[in-house]
Structure formats: C-alpha cells, structure tokens
Image (cartoon, rainbow, N blue to C red; front, side, top):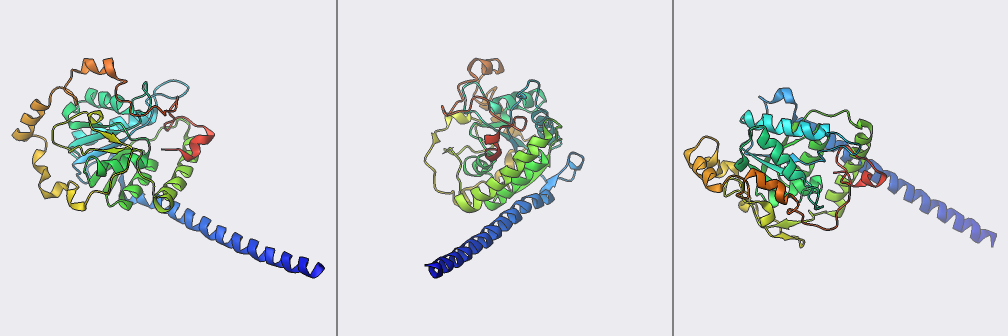
Length: 314
C-alpha cells in the first residue's frame, strides 16, 4: 500500500510540475503579447507632432463618458474632442467617425461628441456616428466592416491608441494614432484598467476570436451622410468583407476632399444634420439611438472604476 502511495505521490508531483511549467509558459507568452501592444506607440503621434502625422481620409474618435462619476466634465473626453478638431482643421483628416456607447436610452456618447465637434467648427456633414462602439474592438472592427475604411487615424489617449492600433493591424487595417492629452483624473485606476484591458485584448484576438456585438449594412464615407441608426443592426455576425470591397482612399475615393465643388454640392444635398434635421431637434430625440436594452446603468469610461470593470475596460 505504501509503495502505491509513493508512486501515486510521485506521479502527482510530475503532473503538478508539468502544469506549472505550462502555466508559466502561457503567462510569459501572454505578457509578451501585452508588451507588443506597447510597441504600437511607434505608430502614434503626440499633439506637437501634428505636422508630421500622415494624412488619412478618416479619423476614428473612440468614445468615453462625457461626465465623471463623481460629477464634472471628464478630461479624457474633452481632450479627445480637442484633438479631433485640431486634426481636422490641420487638414490631416477629412471625415470623422465618432464611435461610442449608446446601449442605454439616456446615454449617448456619439451624439455628445458630434455636438461638441460641430461647436468647434467641424462641418456636420463631415461627422459620422457609430452607435455600437461598446468597446475598442467593436469600434475598430466596425470602421472596416461597416464604414469600409482600411486606412484610419485613431484619436484617443496614448494607452488606448496603442491597443486600438494593435487590434487594427491584426485585422489588416493600416492605422496610426493621434494622442490626445491625458487627464490626471483617476490615473491610477485608469492604468489598472488598461493593464487588464490589454490582457483581454490579447485573449479576444488570439484565443476567443471575438467579434463586434453588432454589425449591419455598410455606410460609405463621403456618400450621403445618413444616421447610422437608420442602418439595420444585426446581431448575427456577417462574413468578412473581401479586401476589394473595402474602401481604399488611394483607389479613387479621394475625389470628395474638402474644397471640391462636387463635395460642396453633396453637402448641401445631405441636409443640415447627419439625419437631415435641425440641430435643435437633436435634443428632442436624443434617446432614439438606443440599440440595446441590456445596458449598464452607469457606463464606466476612462473616469469610472469598479472591480468588474477590470475586464470590461474599453
């Protein structure tokens, strides 16, 4: 009996040892890939490098809450609006897609960002709304699958830009980032959330093969600027678009750049807002863009923090 116990104990030690070695290897591999996300800083540009950043037809502004949980304006949100406006007025982008969360009837990140950009002089027909940007992965993949762009400039803080560029390049999207000014609001919890967000990013891309929560009909940048909520949102994933079907700015779509007579005429035909209404009407139906009833009551942007948010960081 004692011989059996000794043999079983030896076998158990071997199994545990192998398990520990495999677990250690996976942890090292995971952390190595997380570090690779930081390497994407090579494709980002700071505010003082605005003259050096390459031109891309479309800029993607990643959403966050406008207001802090404890009150006041979120510094991350303000900085992203300022950066997007500066980039547009510098002629480094021609169109802006504002992508954010609208999963709750009373919470609408894209519409808030659109209003702020218009107030800073960005023409309303140059702004497209993506109501299904629940996470960075959703926003980045949808810019290709829905808005048909494969060359983009991501506009957010440096830490999120690095993650977004990593996601983009894994999906064959040529992306650079424009780093908005970072806020000092809850910087410690923001760093913690970003660490876990990068772990989830690696798992999403290389283990789970995660897809955006919603896909839908294509919205062509530069064509008639319709409200994205008019496009059918589909919960069933669609097959990937062929590379030839994704818009290539270098393949003839540059004809609608600022200042052309053709585009000015198109802008006049498109109406006064992205859905053809007066700006004053936006406040009347700001809740109409909701596409999901399974919303969290207090969305956590870069300003909020809760334990469960560690793995849901956008």
